[in-house]
Image 1: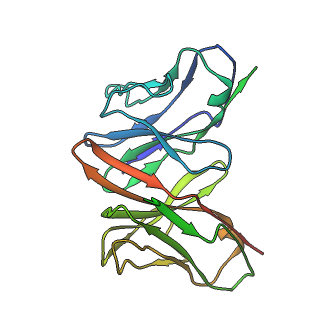
Image 2 (image 1 turned 90 degrees about the vertical axis):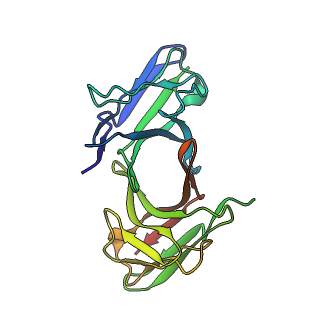
Image 3 (image 1 turned 135 degrees about the vertical axis):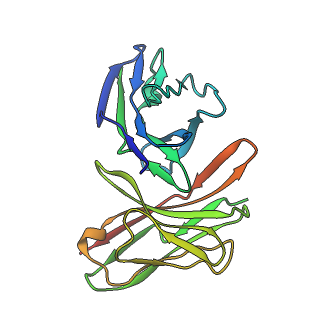
Length: 106
Length: 114
């Protein structure tokens, strides 16, 4: 069965520091992985997906099939990055991790 | 395009009452899904649909019914509300294009069951 694990519920960093939000998955096939972001009391928005290998708002994520990970990284965090971040895996349906709340302190 | 819309935005129910959460999309997407969002548990899939007339259960389907009579609409029915169904409910529509799977979320419905 497909499963997504985000081991950190809370993550706090100072502005300008690097940030890494961890995501591990279990899936027997070729995964299609995503990161979504949810700013305070807003709907979820797609941040990026591994298939497009893009950088959005300075964030990148690399799929590591050997470690079954899809960690989200940003070299210099900004206060406006404070939000909930969800990792998700798509098979026939989309399954989400429990989410990590990122707080970027001034 | 309005995208994915949900009504109502807020709802308070008493235990045992029934109600329907509405979801509509105007993007002609094949797939639609309902999730509930609870603190510490992320988003959990309730039901989903891969096309009009086709629905299937997700992770937490008990206590909820869905139907998909049109491509545009995917209502979620609570048959007999319970306090455990207090949550924020998100509807999403999605499609699989040449660039892969894309999913769009509605603004959410905050439901409280007392």
